[in-house]
Image (cartoon, rainbow, N blue to C red; front, side, top):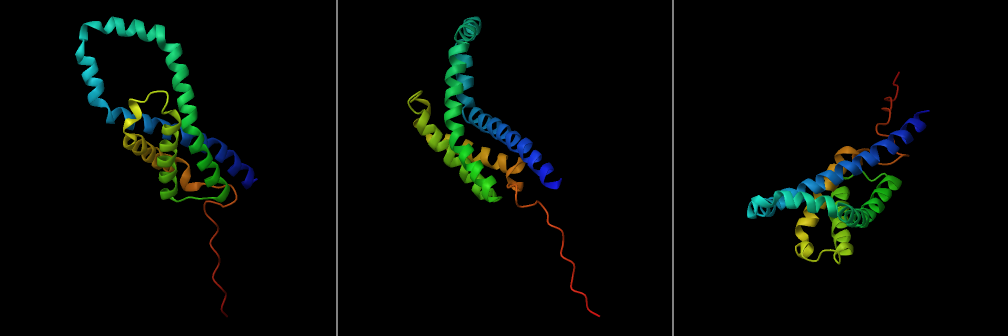
Length: 160
């Protein structure tokens, strides 16, 4: 029964960790590019209605491109997570490196979609490192199905 509970826990915690890691990566990139957002918003404040209309019209195409690029960037991270779960790798260094390497590889795979954005891969790798640490905090510290979180303490030898 304990094994079934642990399996169900892994099926809940791993996707939750992936979602938290994705949000942390996005927040990291938004904070890194905050000056560009402010510059764009203050460049033409009277055109806000045009921006909203363009977003409504272009939203399906934007969502499709974003879905493809997020899928391409999450594939290497998912492979790293599967390796960590299979071999019960719980090191924060492994998960941070997995996030950084996955972001770098994913950014290289998406590079053709928007060349101007990926000219500086350092920000992409930094967001991947932050995402890897966030994943470790949620799910990586207890990775692996076959290795229990805490094993019962061995009783000391009896002396008579």
